[in-house]
Image (tube, rainbow, N blue to C red; front, side):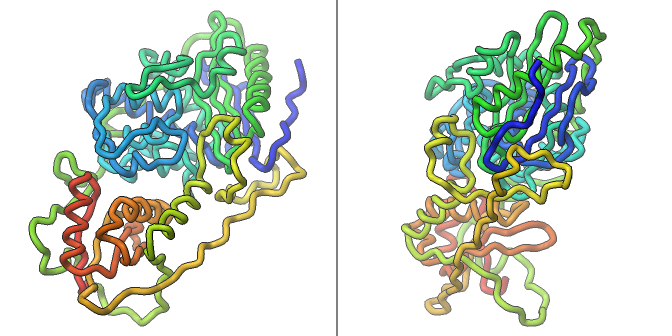
Length: 464
């Protein structure tokens, strides 16, 4: 058997784990506890929670899910969903499992929890219940985001739970094509499935920060092996490496071993969160605005020493918004087929965290991607014409999340928000996404329009 030497890559860190799926015994590991970007391996957890919710009657495969603007505007890979469209959950699951569609994954999360942040908390509760001790999720799809990280060990544990906790759905991960309602989608991992004997799943992942990742499983006779790899330089290189890892697993695993399936995490512990009242069909804590608001919905802030103003981004015109959105999408481009990834224009992506000294790199000659420079920011707010009102469109776990929502809302509400100021306010409870510099009438109109599309919104008065 060929020696397991690290493959050449541009910069992505390498990590791997091989496990006997029957017993959970680790047969090989390398950098397996190093926190790295999981990319679309994340969708295994999104799908796991969907399967669990279906089995517990929380939702059904035939439930029609209304697509929100957030889901519709996710970058590729995507199914092509439109805001306001209704589609059955079964098609979203197929698109996320087979095509690795980001819009479908986000739609699943919002269908289960009402908003992306709440679903991320549910993902983290499930990860903790499974013993995934070094994983933190921030979104349902796996696009690069600060704090959204996992390890080869944790992703192997998750893959094992998918196989044994929901065997009735596991066949999804081996389908070469699937009917996703509005399109027939092809599997992102069909090359490995076709090339490796016994392979039947599970999930690919790719971002520039992560490299080419894969959690694979294969069954031969009574033996089943799971192999996880982070940091491949291409689809072909990743598949070759995982082939070696799988061969190693089958060579080291005993031909006979008692099945010791993992304990399925409690549905109640995962689905139940701290009380967070919300009306049915709303996203998180949504305050419905009926008529004009005459006072702020927030308490007056305590007096504080005067400080330098926080950098803010100006909504100048549609061209600026489009450029900013293009920059975000380019920096966070996810799970595109290998050919598209090779021809894509160079883009800045968020660099991984500092690497441990003993970390095996996929290439020692290639420097890590440079951290993106901060965008130029402009501060301006009109104080004339009574433009002292604002709106809040949600509270999020990270500044990036809040800024991304602001960009998307701005694109969808250019007629009412043109000339307003995007502001992210940080507090101990999270990052509030606000538009400031509006008249009371404009703020009220914007909130009404956003709420009609299922977006959280409440008005902020001049005294807030």
